[in-house]
Image (cartoon, rainbow, N blue to C red; front, side, top):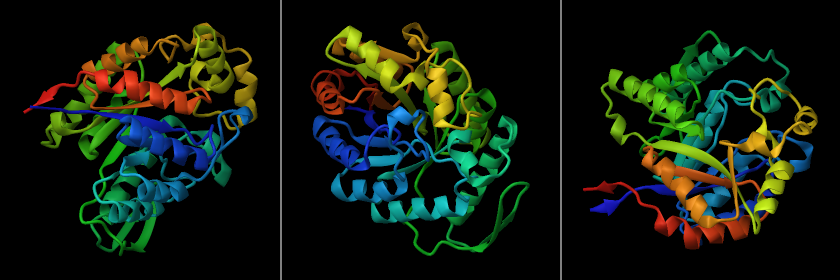
Length: 334
């Protein structure tokens, strides 16, 4: 019998310089983290977060300097990126680092996608764009010449010449029932963020339903979750750094239509500590962090990616490596 499961490090490009993130990923690997979820942003949420490097340049460096698995959390096709370019980038990384890259996709936010100057559509249209893009990427992964003319995505006689032996898995980030079911049908796994147990169970049920419609076994399909925590030396500092460094985590309203970091900064002024409840675990007690992560393992997630919102990344990584990761109880696998 073997234990299964992944604790991953969430590399947040909105907050940190890519060189620092590379160093911390090496520390994370030494500390027992086995995968990296790297955010894909053009802008930070607030100007104070201060960074926003191009994640795809960095992923090749991560592959070369660690043995970790890694993926994007998440890349939105159809606006800044044509899906053909995402397919090319993903195929290249998986060809270079077989079995290590996974492609995380999502519908995107105006914060990053409005820059191309096209109309920012309503949520149902964004989901249709995402579905077309997934279809295009899947077709290109076959290595055949592809033409595609959808309602939103066009592709003219394109073919990928550099291909991995096996396409990288595609996971989709979703927080709603309709997309969860579609994800089960058309993708290899699901990504979500912390929510109420009731909502998570509902999303997973829809995901399983979609998978079974396509004769897939949902128990063999990865379930990824990203959790935001604020770990610090004292409880007050844990709360203060959440407010200072990740105010967007305490905004209890939809954020996908807000266009500028300055607008987020203005909204940050109304965020209070109580707004982080059930959104960001703020604690200086690593036993509490262990209990928090264990809860999501018990809910059925096999990959848990943890983002510490503070600047104290090395302390967080080493603390988790010593006191959290070794103590997690994963389901047994025969």
